[in-house]
Length: 207
Image (cartoon, rainbow, N blue to C red; front, top):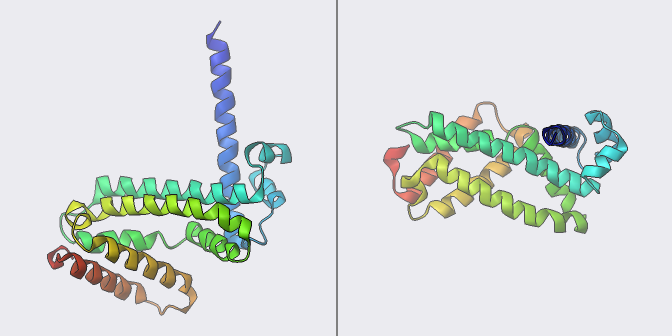
């Protein structure tokens, strides 16, 4: 008899998790398309196909929903990178390969949604206060995954941390001006970033 309530509980939890994922995916899609000011909870619930009550059950405010959505997608992307490291990390050219993977994360809805939140936070103190702690956590996760990408020989070398910070900031700036970049400029940027890291850690042979 105890098995029936247990199965019912698991089914309910699965439905709840599925609904939450739909809301988070919808929030990212709307944030990417319409920016923070144009993203309403009504639009998100409509896009997700859930009721108002279901949205409020999971997320008490628009800010909470937006932050959860970006974190949700960021963690999925980071997990995908780790799987890539475990299955496709090359024996040679590790630095350039790692730089290419990092750069690939600056394209798509996650980055654009993140930029929308960063820009909105500049004039929204409540959003900024909520965003800063999450950004610290995500930043820590990015650096941990980057260490896996580059491998211990690079990640444990002197100068790596500063070089990584420079490259991540440069990637964000380059990605933010996507419409102004010349066609074919990505390969040039990747070579420059790879050379910077290689020079800083003293491992030119790893390019």
